[in-house]
Image (cartoon, rainbow, N blue to C red; front, top):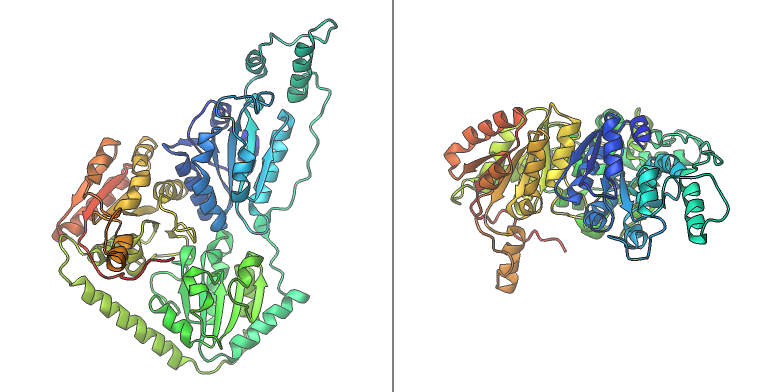
Length: 580
C-alpha cells in the first residue's frame, strides 16, 4: 500500500487510529508518507478532500471499521456532490468472522454504496496493490468523486498475528490427519497470504491517468458544439459567463482557463472554487446582483454551474435567453432547464476551444452592457458601505469582513465554514488568486472548516490560511485545534460569534414568531483554542480589529493555530437568505 501511495504522489494520509487499520498507518509512515491523525473521522475525509482540490490529485484518508466509517459519511457525501475525487481506505472485520458478531462488523457496502462512485473489498493480500491503483483511477474517471477500498483486518497484519487470531500455531507443511476445521483454516490462510507461493500476483495494466482527460473539441462531432456556442456568443449583445468549481477542478489547467476567459472578454461571475480565478480586481469580474444580470442577458454560459437551487432551478435566467451549459455530469447539463447547447465535458477544454473559435470574431458593441453591470456593482458596494456604518455593537459583521479582507496576504487561502457570517464574508472578502477559496459546495455542509484548513495548509505551507467560522459551525470541529497544534499547522480561525444560528434565526423568527433551537451562548471559543494547545484572542472592540488580526497573523506564522473569538452584533444584511 505504501508503495502504491508513494507512486501516486501521496504526501499525507489523514486518519483516526483504530485496531483495524493500525498496520496501514505504520506501513505508510515507514515509507516516508506523513500520517496526520485527527480527532474526528469526518475531519480526516474533509482534509483529504481539500488536498484533492488544491493539488488535483486524490487525497487519501483511512478510517477504522464500523463507527469510524459511519462518522465519515457526511464528508464523503459532501465530496460526492462537489465532484471531488478522494480515496478512503476502511478497515473491516476478519474475512472468516464477517457476519458472526465481531467487533464493529456491519454491512459497510450497503451503507456506503449511495455515497461513493466505486466500492471494492480486498479478498487476498495480493489484491491490495492492484485494487488501490484501480481506486485512484476510478476516483478521477469521468465525473470525479470519492471511492472506498475495504480492507479486512486479516489482510493487513503479519501472518503470525493472524494465525494467532484464528487460534493456530506457526505454519506447518501440509500433512494428513489434521482436524477438518484446522485444515479448512489452513487452506483459507494459504489463499489469503499465498504462503507457499503457488499463486502469483497478476500484472495489472496501467491505465492512462485521468488527469489528462479527453478535451478534444477540435474536430469530429464535438467541434459542432463549439461552433454552435461560438455562433450564439458572437452575436450576443448581453452575454454573461458563470463559472463554478469545475472551472478550477484541474489545477494544472487553471492558467488555460484564465487565458480563455480573458480571450472571450465576457462579463464573468465566479462562484465556489472558481472564486479568485481572475484575482482580486479584474475588468471582467463582477460580484453583485447576479440575478438581475441573468434576467437581462441574452446568452448565459454555465461553466460548471448547474441550474439547481443556486440559480432558482433555472428560473433566474430569462426564459428567452440562450443557455450554453458545460458540465462534468450528464445529469447536470439539462438539470431543471433544457440548454440551447448542452455539453458534457471539461470546462477548461471547452472554454479554450471556444476562445479559439471566436478569435477573429467581431461581436456587437457591448460597452453599454459592461457599463450597466459596473454601475450595479458600484451601487451594491455603496449599499454595503452604508450598512457597515450601522450601529451593531459590539462589531458589525461587515466591518470585520472588510478588516479581514484588508489583512489578507496575496498568497492567502480562505476556508468557508458557516452560514450567515461566512456568506457575509463571501460578499465582502476578495480571494487573491486561483485556488484561494474553499467552501463545501452544493451540499451546504457545516463542519468542513478544520479539515479543509488542515489539508490546504499542508499542501501550501507558505500560504496564509484563514478559516472563517460561524459560531454554530465552529462547534463541529474546533477540537481539531488540538490536531493543528500537535502537527505544527498554523491556521488563523476567525469565529463570527453572534450567539445564534443567525441565518436560520432571522427568518424563522420573522416567519414563525419563535427562535426555538437557534439561540447559542456567546461562548469563549478563544479559551477553547488555548486549552487545545493553540492560541486564543478575544475581539470585542472594533477599534482593536486591525491589531488583533495582525497579532493572529504573527502567531500563525510560527506554526501555532490561533482562534479569534470575534463578538458580532446582529445585522439585517442577509435577511431572507435561507435556501430550501
